[in-house]
Image (cartoon, rainbow, N blue to C red; front, side, top):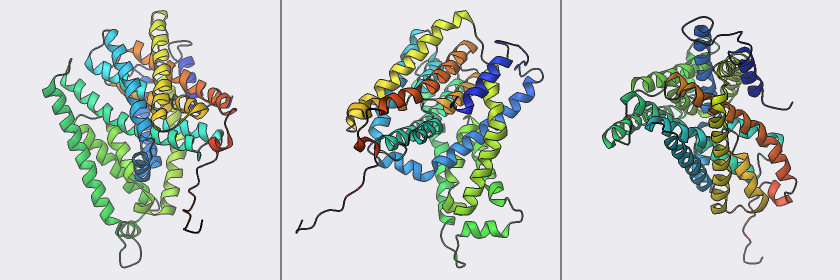
Length: 396
């Protein structure tokens, strides 16, 4: 059906779970739910590790360098404000309101890239804008997740400055650790007397064909453990570990080989189990339908108008402006990761979890056909990448 395999994996979990056939019980207190919960955690690990590797330091620089950072600011702030206000109106507590705001503001980078590639728009101005905004959104979402988990752990039920300040301080300290590790690793990329970097020289002295993979996983797990130690979900640390693993650090050929191996393990084994486990935990009830419709509508409105408003500031007009808002609406993997972490941490209940899962499926499924309809009216300059022309001399 030309949809992301993630959609089929989640739907398979819904069909096999308690909502429809009831063949598999996801309850972690019994089997096979306990085993599936463990494997799904491994799925989270490799998914966020791969997301960090795909993003990389260059992605961070691009997200800050492009003018579309204006789009990212508005496009995250508006859906977040709407989600937070909606949760407050529904009587949710402070951490739940923060969580729903973050969940409605996130954009899935892998889904956005796949859609743009299918439409041959990845290297156009609109494509670069969507990717840059998705990069920034992913970073902010992981930072917000760490903050929300810390606020939940401390039991804050309102905007208590002391508790909020303590939570922010712990996140800043963790980011300081990430920065220190980054500085140390950057120092090891200097060229050694042998013509290669010090870090790659160390890798060559180690035994084993997958030494680059082993060191990278150790780095990711170290930051994951550090994140857990300060009350942040391990996925946040693993994500930053993946960001620090770059071609310059371990070598271009080794990086490509390792990324390919991680992709194979992720999408060939662990990610399908994780997405199916997300579907298993989906609970369909008639009482939840008003909440599902409301959250989906607010999610659509927030992303669409947030993208349009931000796009106006960044200089987009006409159909590209509309395409920007629609293209940023797909949530995919990132949303499901947030929902699963929120459910496991006790931040959200099963009704809100099911609403987020269904909203994710609807927004992800609807984005490609809507984008196809919009780009039919694109002009040539809307599709072709911008080319920087050389400045003319005095003689013209």
